[in-house]
Image (cartoon, rainbow, N blue to C red; front, side, top):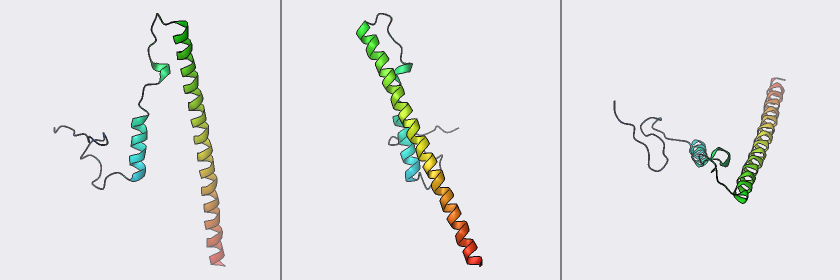
Length: 103
């Protein structure tokens, strides 16, 4: 078996995907996935001898992280809902146009 070569620039394995390469959308998605690999505050180990202030700061960071995630989730839901409505309108228009042509 030959070793897997990884691109220095993108971190994606070479000679695996089709020769065309990634589309712009796929490349953007990969960078977003790689950027989001940062460790979350909620999963980090806490020290047993942390002070009151450190504990408070850690708890606040977790709360902020969760709040941000909720906002992100809500934005995604709304975006998908709007896209669904847009596509349904487009399909309806297509159907009516085709029916109009038949008459």
